[in-house]
Figure (cartoon, rainbow, N blue to C red):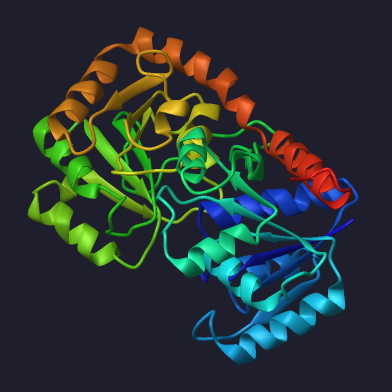
Length: 358
């Protein structure tokens, strides 16, 4: 079986990590995989380094006819049994490149927590799919508003857990005796990320014994740092940058906080759970599927800095509760293993290519 994977994003975020886990797992299971990506992107370079066959493209728009024509020829050359689109841009390019009536099976993993558009082009794109995969029940519900239920599969995002014990690490500028809050997020200001609530909660706490460690990078890093400065909390926040391996830094933290207005699932939360961290997160999107309020963490109303601050203080002052939640989370995190995700996709590919799909 040969599967073509399409992703034309130029960054390395949660979706690209999921593709990495999937490609490695499928190869280990004897499935041939070919990546079609943006030349020079982190994912494309990773695929080349790992020895995966990969086609790289340079273009300004996924509607570029020269790009689409080349993609069509390359897909025809590879003759995959199925094409897996991993983003909206990849879905658009693949829809334009693969001729109508082609025997190639087509599936999309839907990772964004927004309702599908209702325009004619979007309807055609989705009707041409053999299957759409939702990474959370929240996204599955959104897909069901626009698609037949028999064309929707449910496979949660996963995390590839380290095989060896992880040693604790803390970034430069953080003292060991501090109560350490870990935050992992792309430094981007938009309709889903919510740094203002994080920083406002730190302002309410106003406690020099508490440090927030922000891990990540992004196009709005300067603006976000300025936001912390304007709120008067920059001295309480350490911007630690992007880390290839977050596990040592999560192990070095006391709790994990995730503040958003919307989220499909939140794989950074799962990583934190695996490391035994109590989690405080916004009650938004698919997050309540992972964080069960009062059991393995706490949920706060999106944008409610006062509520977030109260929860941080509650966990800081109750070491016994932190240890109880920590033990629960280590076990719960294992339910999101990449091995389980790979097995689910492999079964889906087989059902589609062997004629058992919708």
